[in-house]
Length: 175
Ligand code: GDP
Ligand code: MG
Image (spheres, helix red, strand yellow):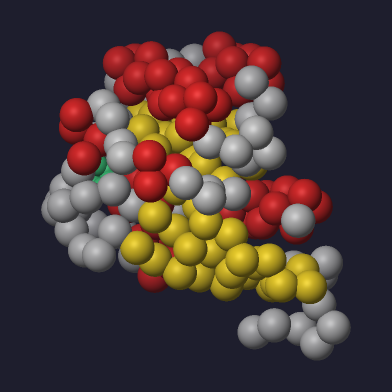
């Protein structure tokens, strides 16, 4: 619900990262509050909307999810075009996905808008016993690239709302 007198920010948010890192699951957790152990890789319309009301603004997210095209490590320019925010997701239990995340970050920096609000999302924290990517390394990388860093679990819902709230706050600030 929009609060009266509040500014409204409409923001396209793109989800990036390797296949299987939990992009669709994060979107579904945030938008629907649900999680599926056997998430279909190509499920759905690849498009979600969600509204967050902050004190300073109402942020309307248009969330763009991939339908598996990330398998080919490239996405059409229209996917990034006009994006105000980008979430680059990796799986803490798979080092390869962190290395790939860095490539996705470069991709956004190359193709996107220089003011884009970016976050590096360390997903699947519930798999901590199988962790391959240390926090400190990822956090430092995020810092060097001016990105928010957030550890999440779409499975347990850990930090998922916090992630989108922080993105919304940053969008409200730059809009
Ligand atoms: P996408 O390809 O990046 O969209 O990844 P999906 O959302 O399809 O998730 C891939 C697989 O990882 C699915 O089996 C999900 O159930 C699982 N998954 C997603 N997020 C988490 C998480 O936070 N923890 C665990 N344990 N599994 C997750
Ligand atoms: Mg997906």
